Image (tube, rainbow, N blue to C red; front, side):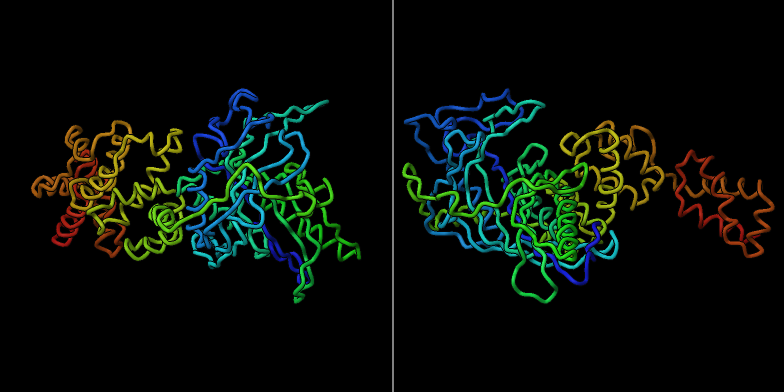
Length: 490
């Protein structure tokens, strides 16, 4: 966790601009497919290249995705939005402009719930909301690949639908920024809007950071920080920039409004250019695209697709399944995992905690050890419920349950199938257990004396031989009862 007690004299004010690529089959204004890792400049056509006479055609699936995003975050959805040209000259934009939304974005206002760090990893931290200014839709630009003596442009990314999410200057620490991006990513992935893989450029973040004396209402001079290519990298970059600005002000220097690049290895920021203002981009309505009208039927259809957000699900898991925070904090961030858990617990709510423990502690451990994903797993959700039922009903012991689980993971068989095939059913035959217990007591006279003298732990000396004689199949509860009865009678 980044330390946020940077200075009692100054406070930071932070706003973010987050770009998220929408997961669609084709690009924003053309039928060219989207993709990652293809040979350079193969996912292009006259529209992407900006050739004369090429006209854009809007991708409705991308509009669905951004409206869904707005509904998730309680935004006001505009009844009409339009497209604008953001003009600038740079090699990554062959048209010399980017189609975006300026004064009439499709989503305004809204908020994202975040959880701040708690006193420990096992305790839930405080929650708050970060306000959003707007969410709008635009097309992505190409990617510059820099080499020792030259740079090459790859336009495969150009034209990919891109959601830009702009926050209010509503955060004050690097940890809040980390929490916001984590919550945002979880929601976008859960809704199927994007995979948000920052290594593939599917989620990118610029941070606007200023500092001011504590108690001052007006904002300080804003610096934009770029080249933040992971959520942890954003936190590190914001933390460094806050410290840099405070140190400069304490030396009597003036903060310059500029764009700075964060070096992920050296963990420092360096100047790139002075910051552009909106008028520098000469926005004007795109003459090739009509405005979009969003009616109530469209909104209702998408509202039905809004997923249960992570913190709402966590609160439900607390109440419905009585799960502790340590378990829900693992299950909830992964929609596939939480869905898998709910499939396992269906019809077995009374065993929810035991089922969750097997999933979080054992299943995830084995998946990580074997490099598998949940989709690769041979165990079915109902198999975990069956394993818990077999253990709690006394069919198998907790020790045998571990053996059964390992076999289930390897073969995909149910617990019942493994137990029967390997003959692992627990022995509860009283006569046989009494015989083994008598033999164990006869073989350890000193332990008998110790137990009789009041040493309760001495009884464990007999349990090992009994379990060995039964090949691990003796019912531990019955063994304990029989041993205590026999010792009391001596």
